[in-house]
Image 1 (cartoon, rainbow, N blue to C red):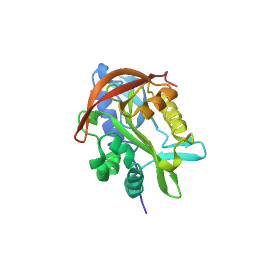
Image 2: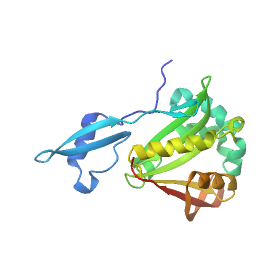
Image 3: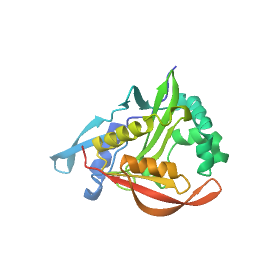
Image 4: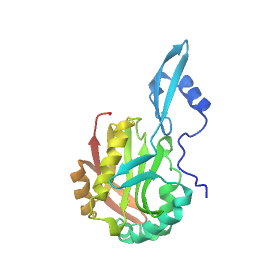
Length: 226
């Protein structure tokens, strides 16, 4: 069965080069979906662009995190169902049936200018952990970890921490210098987890999940480009 995986490039290479040629200087460093760009002057009004595709697999302990696609949806749905207590905690229990599709689905405004990356850890073809990342929001070097979810049977075994560290290294390798995420105030376990990883509270904000409005922390980590 052919699986529609997360695409390496959004649009043709010709459109990517045209975007750089047409963009003002302030936009030259904008993130082009799922590619690391190195550019130099190639002549009057032109730029030569060399593209290095991003790695779509990452080693996490004894497992390999790989890009997820449409054919992983049933397995991802089962992971979300097993994690119902998490969705209830953050106030999104009513949307549990659509959670997996939203993880794999397209970005909503105003995040559409960024690029979505979804990685999963699999065993025997079944997803038991997932990470949902947003590249290039709000600036080209900013990233957001939208979700890191480990199935109940795999928790408290170091997998979540190892996956988080591998993801952060991968982000740095691909030009990210600032990583942010949001933790609802009622999720104290997640706050402690991310602080152990190295994140710090940046500020508080109000979030609306499902029908519940709650206060949340925005956490941040600054890292040099690898």
